[in-house]
Image: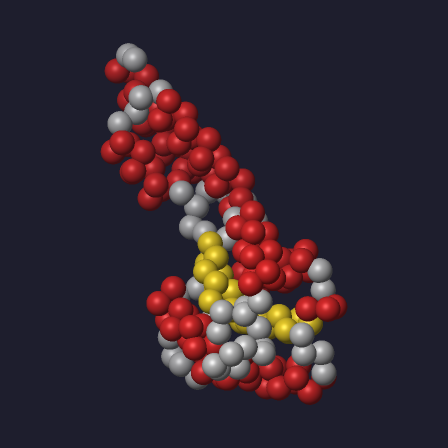
Length: 181
């Protein structure tokens, strides 16, 4: 491969960064992967690829999914990953509190009825902990009573959805809304 082509491709990284910075995250992610494949197949050095990671790789929004139902959790994980989110799942409230501090998600999808620590208690603790007080929290629960919704709102939930009253796309839309994507 001629040296001029290699340096021309490398110098185009800065131009590509400017062009892709205005794209939607999902499109930018696809473009990044295509560009990586191109550079790998055309012999660019690894250092060039790794320097691209910092400038062109999209910063995925991180979602902590707190759901004790394995089948439902796997369904949401699959869909949210396909939407371009970085997902971590925990199965109970105790793990949720630890993961919220360690993983530092942009948003938590929180079930209300869980083993060990309830979703309401998790919500209350997250809202009263300085590191997590401003975290976006969406409750996705089977509890459909107005009193449960009011309780969650009183504790500072950003959104409250009843599992039997929404479909997957509704949940994804609300998550995107709260994340501003």
